[in-house]
Image (tube, one colour):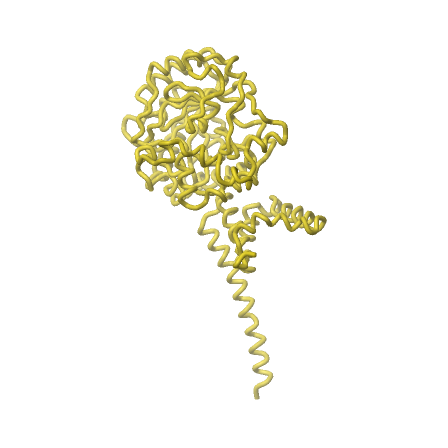
Length: 351
Length: 111
């Protein structure tokens, strides 16, 4: 299990942005598999264009208490990219005026940003309908200063979405690190204790499942049924929905695929599972992703690949929703990850 | 020609069998797809049955496919191994039950 990010290990994959070279070359360059652009063109969906903006997703920093094997952010304790209060002020200005109904804070572990609580308090005042914080669960138990997070989330009616790769200890710890499973279970019980995830509770607690290896997620409904049964029977835990998310071949997951000799097979699986009806609802069509330093992207994945929006508005300081919405979405072969099977997004399946 | 009987890359070409007999190939794949849908048995249960049978018929392609399918369905390695043992038990039982035939024959031929 790695304890450092690829960046801290100075891996060429992320340092020189070799990722685009890999995603555009090999089996795609030699014609074995079609480029994503050509695939969506078959159904007249190229160029991919945004619909109405619904979700503003803000990445408040890449620092994290975990170093998960599959992380597309390459997050970890050694990452220093943290959103400043100045950038948060610019984000707040946008949050107060956006037509988006959902605000989605992610990271890293967003709670590790020193201005996280201030930002949440300010943003909550804007009256956004659905205010999501993506919490990795273990952060709640990582340090005394985080113990009251469940109460803090409750106070601001935060919709908590947490990662839980499996309902068994072995699989969870292999993907996320030794001890993660037990800490996550404790954190879930604490969230339940303040009302999160309970049947009929308005305090939303959803879980995210993503496969711990080179395979695609199964049917979201069936997985949710299995997770609910196991977590309830074994630990008395309640939650609302399970979102299954496909791992995209970016950063540490791409590194893993290549190192384990699974890259080509995985890309074949993604392309074979291509579902044209998922294209219409991929999250880049209703989301804008903001990086820790204020740059704008079509999605969190493009952010990690350094692919800024193809618009004259590229930074939160110049934000203009109308101009921004009139753009072509930047795509590459990693996009097959969001169109496989039932489709995949930060909100789970899209079909 | 490949220099071995089984090539993992051939699995990706399975669908090509339809090229030489479109009607039968299409019927087979439609049937195959239908069989593994949720029904009275869950897709999860069917995946485990398929994994056990894959071992019994010793199909390396099927073993790869249903190991991956099991992972995708959240099936644990303990469940997978139990399924393999269930298949192995039936297979070895099928061999051993013939021991009764051997015993019968032995007794008939012996004074």
